[in-house]
Length: 171
Image 1 (tube, rainbow, N blue to C red):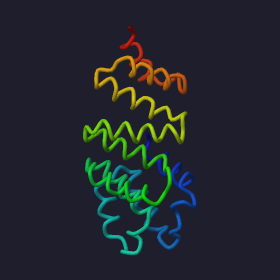
Image 2: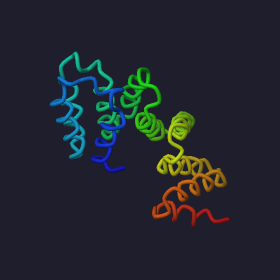
Image 3: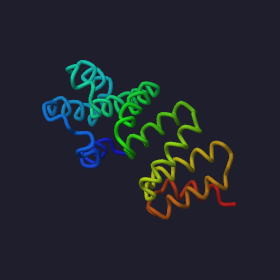
Image 4: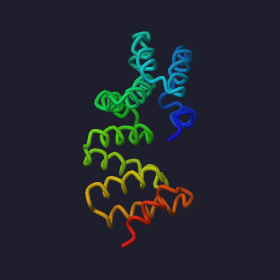
């Protein structure tokens, strides 16, 4: 996922569910800019130095979780995403990022649970189908992996990675 697109999609997707923080727009913008420019350590530092009132918001936790994810601090990312999910029902991208964090920590069961929740919200989430396929492939369940790769391919047949995976599993 391209990180710049992430922010633009999330500002729209989260909408009023998360962005109740008008006074913090400058801080949000700075954090988003740091994340977009792949300065993840600086983004974490910037967010951790924010005013204490803003640290209680869901938007803050979402951005901090995202920054932690890209600094390979997956446990901290999960804690941030959990705080957002405890207050926002079915936040698709937060579930996806938490699933990725669990995946990176080799917690396949938790990753799969989050990925499947994302598919309940958005059955057309091609990257989720692909990631589930990758999980099943890593577990040696090649038929399930192929099934999920085919679903991903049906959504976007221009993805060369999916095409390669399917060719490798052609049995």
